[in-house]
Amino acid sequence: MPLLILALGLMAFLVLITLTLPFSIINRYRAGTARRRARPWLALTNIFSLGISALFFLVTAVVSSFWVPRLLSFCAGGFLGGLVLGIVGLRLTRWEATSQALYYLPNRWLVLAITVGVSLRLAFGFWRVWDTWHTSPAGHSWLAESGFAGSMAAGAVLLGYYLTYWFGIWMRVRRAVAPSK
Image (cartoon, one colour):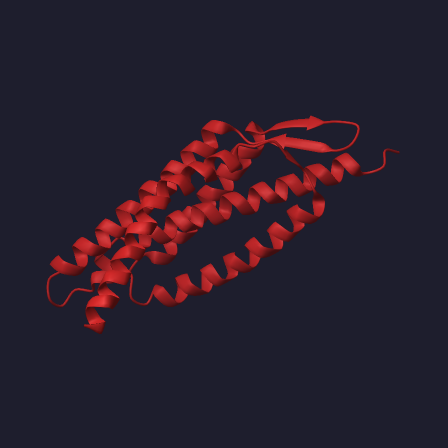
């Protein structure tokens, strides 16, 4: 009986996540395309936090590369792609300087592409892990066969993009508030 209650609780939790996920994706897109004030302390905090995340990501990639072939090359390629995407994102961002502050508006199409790309990669990753876990032949690692390297590369793209994007915002706001000579 307790096992049945645990299974029903887990099912209810999974249904709740499944029902709220589309709304959270839509809210993420709406928040990502909102006009925001460029604050140097917020940009610096995000750069610091993303730098720590990138460090942990690198350690995880190095440790995981013992079990998953080509993981480090996938992660490096994804991170470099994210750096390039961050530069493109900064170029496409609309900047608005007022007498009070500097505001920025991220490009809607780029935010949509990143949001949809991450959502599709997560869905594909869950399906691929589930399928590979049940159908991997004996003697093969289901983790290596599951597309884990691709999922890590997608994470590296996001880290590279946001690290570059926030660094660009920080540089831009520093130039905007610097005293003119």
